[in-house]
Image (cartoon, one colour):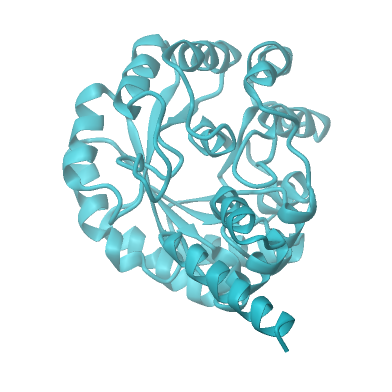
Amino acid sequence: MSIPRLTDTTLRDGSHAISYSYTIEQVKDIVRGLDEAGVPVIEVSHGAGLNGSTIQQGFSKTPEFELIKAAVETVKQAKIASLFVPGIGTSEELREAVEIGIKAIRIAVHCTEADVTEQYIRLAKELDIEAVGFLMMSHTQPAEVLARQAKLMESYGADCVYVVDSAGAFVPQDVRERVSALKEALSIDVGFHAHNNLGLAIGNTVAALEAGADQVDGTVRGLGAGAGNAPTEVIVATLNKMGIDTAISLAGLMDLSEEVVAPIMPGPIVIDRDNLASGYAGVYNSFLLHVRKAAEQFDLNPTEIMEELGKRQAIAGQEDWILDIALELAEKKKDLQNI
């Protein structure tokens, strides 16, 4: 098993969990801690990617380009990356982020829509930065479909393609099958991004590495959408126990987790009823805050909405569907009560 490249996405995926409220000082403190610990890639952007600060996705407390600039000015060794979702971000935001100083862009689409990434992957290479393809909701498609989509991204110039468990719905066998299929199909790196809704983020990350993954993601203290991500410090500890030296300071990450990230968190990341329902139903993790608000508004159990979203195979970008479904369920419940 080769030494994987680790990307920490606390300052992107983690923003979902704190309602996009990062401050410039918090970004500097987290970047400094990750950089000093030796983490090679640090992702910084709104949780929904560049230009994600909208009424639909949720507004950032501090404009994301100010946060990205703070990260770029603070870092000494690591590469600063951002997430980009076509349709939310445009070429204009990508160019602006590159001008500020990001060195990599992670271009995320639903796992059957790789063709949408072509112009942005090609633009990233024209701008001389790393381009990474992100196949979101990868649990919804079999391995052979993901491999074909990944091949498209490779043909556009991607440097790596990720299998992304956006709903925390995978078990290890699912991960092995999909990562193995991409490793067989591609000549570029393969990555894996985990969520912890079934309590398997670390186990799935290990399964990905056993299947040949070259890159994996984590967040400090597991801070992320839904039930969170594979904790960066636990990934490093696990790899150390497996005899894989990442050259990343575990002690530094543990201190960062305890002293900097923990005080930012509104509470511990746990697999509660809503998060488990999301993973079990295969619902996109960043929907959770929207689902909880809709459930409160219409006097519903969030699990009811999650189950319906899962049945309808909702994907990223369909957040407005949550209110429609909540209204339908509320009306059905009212009709039953009136019988």
